[in-house]
Image (tube, rainbow over the protein chains, first blue to last red):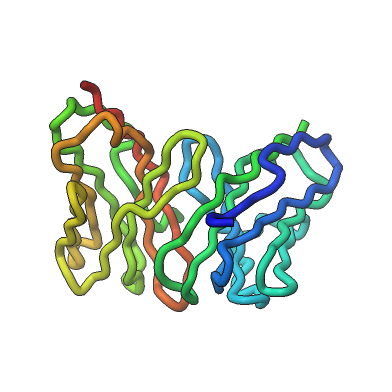
Length: 114
Length: 112
């Protein structure tokens, strides 16, 4: 596709369940970022990859959150044992260059934990 | 600790006016300062960006002013239009070392 694709667009789950959010970046883009955006707030950094290597995961809130990008393309953000406070918009972005330049954001995955 | 502080939180201007949105940063290692525009239901999209070797950059009706000594930068929108109504985010990063950190956003409404 032409842009960053995220799925599912909407996910409603019960507290305690695990969820997996998928990001398909723009073809050929080296960098892939995960951000979380609360309503009325700016994107908050979670983690990022250059190719398949996770460069920085300092923004992941706790060890229930993990991410992978095994082949340097599609990435999955997994949240285990979800809690209500995990409810947010999760956004993926990709960039054509390493650590610099424009980021292209997807339309996000809206997670609601009941 | 908020690394990028953005103001105002919201702004209403008349069509043709010049809204100004301000950002201040703390990390002197930051060397890349973009502004992103976000429409409802969409992801943020890059609008314009500046690096600290220049004090101003203009692209169409959008201008960034950069004050390195004050650690501040601002977005000016000339001849604003209702279609400019959106949320604007400033951001900053240290190229090669840190990912983009975003401000909290400014919700701009341009009324006809």
